[in-house]
Image 1 (tube, rainbow, N blue to C red):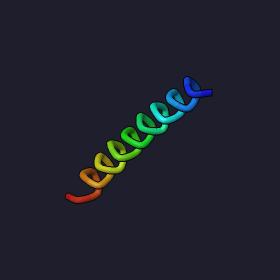
Image 2 (spheres, rainbow, N blue to C red; image 1 turned 180 degrees about the vertical axis):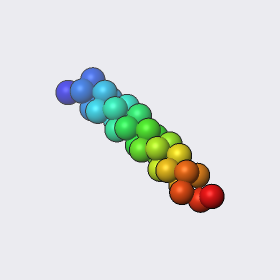
Image 3 (tube, rainbow, N blue to C red; image 1 turned 135 degrees about the vertical axis):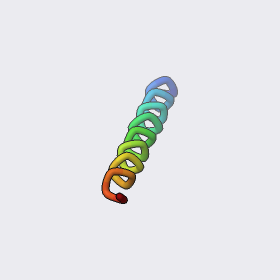
Image 4 (cartoon, rainbow, N blue to C red; image 1 turned 90 degrees about the horizontal axis):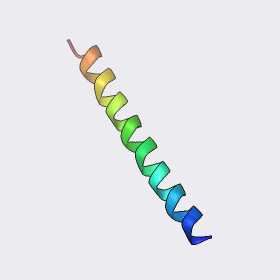
Length: 32
């Protein structure tokens, strides 16, 4: 159980960072 919780937290963190990165990219694209 603990192992799965750790994997889930890591996966969420990676997905969240990717989302933030894409958001920043789009913001820089639309702010000419």
